[in-house]
Length: 141
Image (cartoon, rainbow, N blue to C red; front, side, top):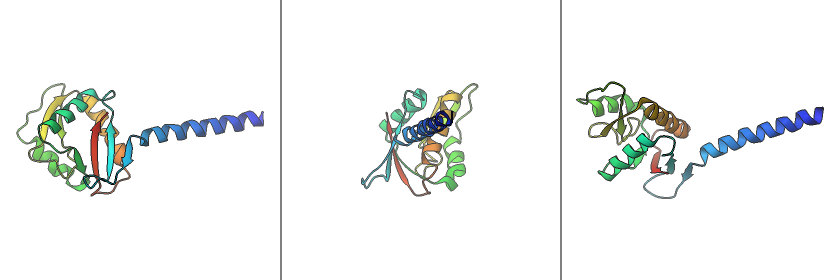
């Protein structure tokens, strides 16, 4: 009985470790001077946000986000200024408000709240350990 419990605990720890490894494998450190890390954004999980990012970058917006959490509120205010709300939609910003590159002139798209908020939460979780000033290149996967 004790062996079964130990095997169960080992299997559980392995499963938990595998989950966290999978979550972090979407990021790679890079020696590229453009960014410190590359983050592969999962288009299959958040297709509307992925399409907005693709579109905004193709129009000339930056694919690199320099993390600036302290500037997020001001950036959000500037990027959404004059963009009306729409029932049943969120206003998605690219570059994101938490990026130094965000703010006035950001590309705005109306997308579903579940896609937008899920994507925002996913990105925040991926970069949680990075200090302000870290440059992260977003690549659509």
